[in-house]
Length: 257
Image (cartoon, rainbow, N blue to C red; front, side):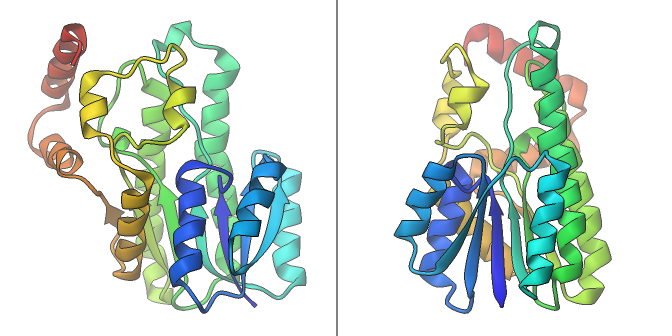
């Protein structure tokens, strides 16, 4: 049985991956939808033409991850695609944030992603794919988004290295690095409801991010960046010292951009 595993599938980018893959990927036997919100997963599953298995769980729970691996083993499933979308971010100065929320970001964005990837790779075969949701925040340090940016920098570095290790086996890893995406993510990240004008200007749809990510994955590309502003930022971070960019970002923040 060929399966796709999608974490964070109940909303946002994870849900969009399920919708687009359901429409265009016909050789998948079953979608395994992972998130904490069972009700939303059930609603999504009902909308799909593929068979869908609902796995309402917190992937930071190691016992739940062990149960997931056991289910893959028992069903003799081949993981054709693992899509790690589960994650969250909190904006604001580091010292002013709730400590457990900051540590939770590391557990979910880094540790759980790493463990799930490690558990699932043995059940892949040549042609399998891994898509890891990173972020343009991975490109350089981000004041007021310090821990989140650090977690996404980890995801990007880990995933690109892993891709080099796995390509000899015909397994390809793509890191997706969007800028601001129009999803519920920012409702959580920005507790005060404010979004800087520049972020609103550069915000893209989840549909666009996912469509390009799937194309880039099929093309065996290690990096997927969907908008000109974010591509420009990526190039800029390679050419200009981060200290200079951070000074400019601080000026833009004070000006309200």
